[in-house]
Structures are given as C-alpha cells and as structure tokens.
Image (cartoon, rainbow, N blue to C red; front, side, top):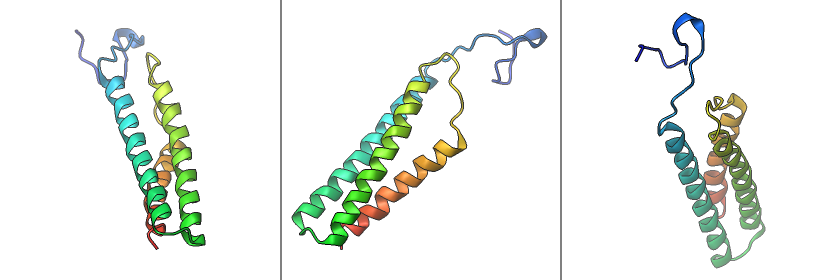
Amino acid sequence: MPAGNGTGAGTGGRLRTRDPGLQPERTRLAWRRTTLACAVAASLAGRQTLHSGTGPVSLLGLALVVLAWLAFLAVAHRRIRAMNAPRPPALSPRAAVVAVGCAVGVAIFGAVTLR
C-alpha cells in the first residue's frame, strides 16, 4: 500500500478511491449523540417551564430553546446525510458556526427558563 498523506492523491497525481473505513460511521454516530443530548436539554427546559409556572420570560426562553434545537437538528441531519457519500465534503464554516451557536443557545436559553 503506497504511503499517502490522507488527501486521496495516488501515484501520478491521480485520485484513488477513498477507503472510508469506520470514520464516517463514527462521525454519523457523534452527530446523532449530540442531537440526542440537545433534545434532552430542550426537553428538560420544557419540563422546567411547565413545573415552575409559565411566566413570559420562561415561555420566551422555551420558545428560543425549541428554535435553537430545530436549527441544530437541521444542520445535524444535513451532515449525517452527507456522510453517506464515498468522499464526504468537509463541514462548511457556516454550518459549524450554526451548530456551535445552536448548542450554546440551547444552554443559555435553557438557563433563562430557570428564572
């Protein structure tokens, strides 16, 4: 097996087919775990809002948690589907920023529901 730098370049400048191994599967599972964790945080925020009274601030926080979770779900679903390709594209910087923003938003908006 020729030594390579992981870029897929073969001998003579030709691209060789990528042997994905288990890396795409691990990435899919990581996105699913993160989506599940985000869903649990959103569920706990909803539970907290229902049990502590439904003030306007708590309801607003819950609505923002749900919106952030739905946005994260869309990014994660798109990324999981992209992992089915033989050579999945890299995660775009925009998608990465949205995913991080949604995760941070769920945490912050969830904290707002504690008021």
